[in-house]
Amino acid sequence: MTPAGSVTVTTTSGPVRGRRGEHGTAFLDVPYAAPPVAYGRFTAPGPHPGWTEVRDATRPGPTAPQPARDSFGTLDMSPYFGPGWQRGDDYLTVNIWAPEPDGPDRPVMVFVHGGGFVAGSGRAPLYDGTAFARDGVVLITVNYRLGIPGFLHLPDAPDNRGMLDVLAALRWIRDNAARFGGDPDNVTLFGQSAGAIIVGGILADPASSGLLRRAIIQSGTGTGAFTPGQAGLVTAAAGRELGLVPTAKSLADVPDERLVAATASLTGLDLRTSTHHDPLGGITSFSLVGEEQPACAVAAGRGGEVDLLIGSNLDEGSLYLAPLGILAGTTDADVRDTAAKFHADPEDAVRAYRAQRPSASTAELRTGILGDGLFGAGTRRMAAAHAKSGAGRTYRYEFGWRSDAVDGRLGASHVMELPFVFDRLALPSLRGPRGLLGNAEPPAVLASRIHRSWIRFAGTGDPGWPVHEPSEGYVQPIGHVPPVGLG
Image (cartoon, rainbow, N blue to C red; front, side, top):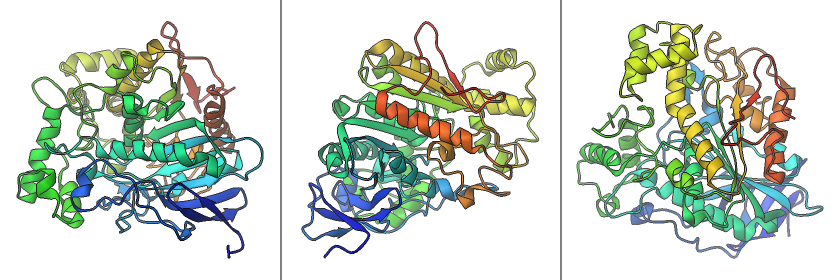
């Protein structure tokens, strides 16, 4: 007997029972691939063996093994990172929020969380999909392998295993979306930060053909992949930390606890080589690995049939500076050192940034250079590559609403757009002196507009502003002062 207030759906893996709410039904902790254990942590994802009894999908499940991370300095980041490592082997799962099953099949939006490739999960409070279900979208969040199991470059294992997980989830969604009221031919893959870099990697991967119709890249970069040589520096450091020669075979018997501890220690590595700078500026030691950047593959025509919405935030770099208390005392030397992370001639780069922002303070210049190096330049390059590559339309945005958090220094930082996209401004942990949104009242009307624009793009391929043409390069301001309408 099905309990009152619940809904049972039979998937290709087995039946699942979700909990009906005011705006649809949530199905949590639904496996899309086999549990990654022992040697299987370092192989491509395999099919889940399935189940015959009704699986309870009313409660959140385990998450990928990961170090504890719930703050950046004085800033509470628990809404973003979620509950951390919730133990259990069967963590390659999706959470699904499905609207009431009336009318035609709905657009499907699949979200890939961020967290530096080492932390986070699809069950973080920010990613509750109720508002999407309320507005007629099937919203799905994905858990994938992180850190050493997900992204360490190994000689006897496929690279980018965490990205392969997301591809496996997309195949499962293609086969099951209609069972939750979704249209399998109208899937939008979207992600933020590390999740956005993964989305770009999937867009550039031929294996994604037919799995997605649209993509959204929020504060990612099309040039964030490590070369095999750079990734090898991380591999060597992991081997020293673990006391072994790192291969999939040698790591097979190493418990998750040791891998997590090693992951936490692999910070601050210098990944610059004689031919390449560190594309992520040292903020993480894990990323996609490849001989070619995703933006280069897209420029060659990969993913050209997919509509793309891509953008970044006005003050991306402030998240990595302001909460740590190091922004206020910024010197000219700090500005130069920041430019040196991304530019062969930092002095020339600083002069160019000063020319672009003649009224910027030293701290603002440092923030701008860091944000542009991490996300802005790679966003522009991916947008330009896609706009020239195929039939899919390209749209760009820049999010500019500034939080008063961290004594007014946080601004429109990295991750700031997420509460607006998910229409989650009321989440209590986002507010107050340590909250991402600060003390001032964030504009609910802006959240409604952004959320509606993302849904409009998923449904029609048009977010409500002009296309980013190669010759014109239109960028839609969102939340800037004075405000600019979203259409």
